[in-house]
Amino acid sequence: MENWFSPELLALIREAEQPHAYIALLLIAAAVPVAWGVPRLLRGPEPRHGSIVFGGRIFDGVMFPALWLGLVWIARLFCVRQHLPLAVFKVVIPILLSLLVIRLTVRVMRVAFPKSSLVRAVEKTVSWAAWLGVVLWITGVLPSFVEALDAIHWKMGAGTVSLATILEGVIVAGFVLMVTLWVSAAIEARMLKGATGQRLSWRKAAANVVRAALVFIGLLLALSAVGIDLTALSVLGGAIGVGLGLGLQKLAANYVSGFVMLAEGALRIGDTVKVDGFEGRISDITTRYTVLRALNGREAIVPNEMMVTQRVESSTLADPKMALNTVVQVGYDTDLDALVPRILAVVPDIQRVIADPAPSVQLSAFASDGLELTISFWIADPENGTGSVKSDVNLALLRLFNAEGVEIPFPQRVVRTLAASGGAETQGVVPGAQSAPSLATSSAPAASASELRDAPPSRGQGPGVLEPGGAVGS
Image (cartoon, rainbow, N blue to C red; front, side, top):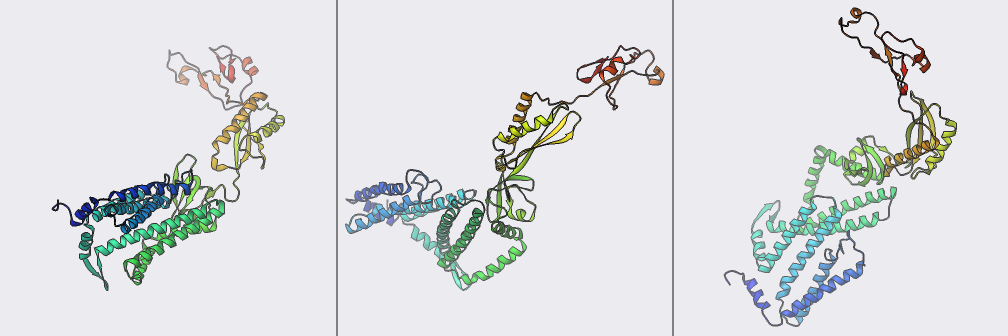
């Protein structure tokens, strides 16, 4: 067995076989209900799906592995004083530490970037790295692995950089960034809680500034902890400035436009706008883009520069009220003096139609088939759509017309039958063939029924007969 395992692992196995080693297992198991019960009491009966500390089910939060790790460490100190075997702690403590790192990364990334597709990849990478570190630590290979990485080094400026230094920097930077994102997410949630309208936009801008500042400070602290001279970043800052001036103009313009939008307050979260042919409600304004959600569920990601430089039609900038209208025709024999008051009495009773401004009815045109009426009304919630309220108004008008006996006319046309005049040679008819009457639609004023009835019949035809709908048949 000595050929297969490292000396550290063999010593761990021998220590686990000593008497009273089971006491450590009992202490670790006894810490589980305490680590679960304390967060349960602090959280309450309702789950908090967006909470980093408690998680959705206690087990997926940060407090559970952190509290369990603290209790296990206290149990280890007790075993040290009692001179009990510590082999179990050498295995359990790295596992709990790895679990804490994974939970912290997962919860922070999901809260800070809920819609990012890279969150899942980061979670898997951190999980594999954490469990690999646990295996290397338990088997005793980790010190040799770190020494091998430290042996690979090269000169960088006035100092020396090795793979071990880079790995340490990545771990420190990752931890600092996780804590920074955690703090920024907590501050953002605190600032946006209960805010609406203009206050929501201002707080969103402040939250974005706080997050950017904390991430920048976190990066500086991580670089300083690794040992990188921060004065060397002046060259990097100059390169970034040149890049912004040449290749990152659009990106910089979008970031600047985002802060301008949030600072001015012309566009707020919850406004209904139309930009570039897409109409929807603003559901989020980030530092780089704005999210519009249409009523059919589709979402559009619009760069902030477009929201600032192009024309944006807003339905809720100064006043959320919106005017709608529907058009209907009635017969020429309709008594409008009696019908219009009935319409004005019915429309305000429809749900979502507001009384101020009051609805109105206009005689908009003398159409060929009837009198054209335009009914205008106002709503105060255009973000809920306009199709349903227009349908309700049309149904109410239809019920009113049916109850009052008002006719909605349909198109009517008069067709006159004209006999073919002249001989067969002049009309281009083949001799011996039977000529058929031609149908023509006259543009002259339509003849009345009495005129058509008294007209003399054409050759080869009987008297004209007035058909239903105004058509004349032979």
